[in-house]
Length: 398
Ligand code: ADP
Ligand code: MG
Image (cartoon, rainbow, N blue to C red; front, side, top):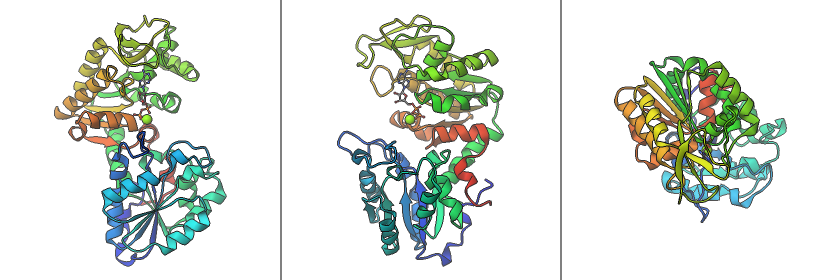
């Protein structure tokens, strides 16, 4: 890594300082408003423990959801503070205010051994537009800066890019360091064949990033709603399936450029739009009925994808193969999880990236049987495509 790590700091003289730590606590909440999956919180504990052990006072910034620059009570970070306190075993104060002056006073009053979590950065106008004035205001909340928000490091937002530009030192946290180590191995020296699988629903965010794999990966498996967009690009009927119309042209250009590398599902599981999987059935991928939606890859596709993955030297996976939250549409995602484990156990370097794909492999109980599970979806893809991220550029060089 060519960026300075928190481990390079001599912490012996830093007791009492405030570390402004950008974390990514954009976690799913359940119906009761509690944290439904704490993996992204757990992933930051090593950095927080390192700081607390040195007597450094952590002040945490994170976003949650997409509130769009104003206060949305359902997207408050308060439940995250509760979960963090329990996982960390140290007092976590939560400031339920977006007043940065009050945040400054509260940060200065923070006691050693305690943590301060500030309210959702995306409640602040100017965060996603990376407003200069907001970046400098946030920079006063710490004596130095740590980016441990790997999943957000591809965003040119004030707390990720603007704030560290005004702080010294500005370093990578332990999570970011570990993520980069695994992804750099995939990027710089993949053992062949290099197989990738893309799925999920954030198609516009991700499709252009697939481009770099057209020349680097031997096999690109496409499932999930991503596949529907490719079907549309092939002129096939997609019924009520989720299709990203603004991405169809891009998908068509990829098909024209690398037809032998792109592998689409031969069959899909279709069902009634927005309903449970009762009455779902398997159809050929070019025969999706007009009144139904494709919600998973079919059995032939599962076999073909699994065979390709099991034979990989390096495997990278982003995005579930279907609407896996619904029983009956989870088989494709499960098959890819199992194939990723088979590949890893046969010696392949296997990395799973993406909030939902990571959750899927964890829920299958297989997360510790692959080489690395990334906390970032878009961020991991963007790093693999470009070899850097905006939030990394804002940190001190090693
Ligand atoms: P990740 O978080 O792994 O990067 P995304 O956020 O892009 O993945 O997409 C995950 C979402 O995609 C899941 O909620 C899943 O239900 C949805 N999804 C995947 N395939 C389909 C499909 N065929 N139709 C509708 N939703 C889908
Ligand atoms: Mg997601």
